[in-house]
Length: 118
Image (cartoon, rainbow, N blue to C red):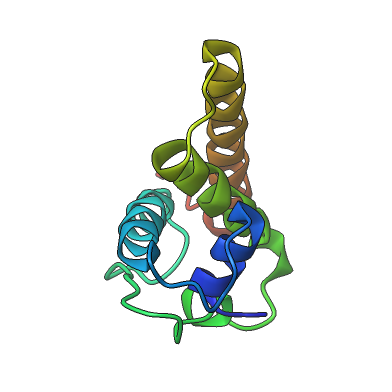
């Protein structure tokens, strides 16, 4: 399963053929992809999905396992926005998880494409 939408729906526990929430999930996926793009990963011009056709390879490029955590980040961010936990403790734990992934993605990107200011 390489589709961005279908893989996020799978980890959310939503069947691929159940489309009632696709518009909401796509909106939240695009928000997460926007943050990842702001961190410097993905196409420089930005990226958005409209359906199940776009794949992770389309966003991350081919053979780029260093950024597999982007998939986890997108799921965590979508979960936080689409289906947040009901307790403040679980909500805060989820937030901490996606914040850690943001940090790790940023560090990994700096490691790979850092340019000295001098």
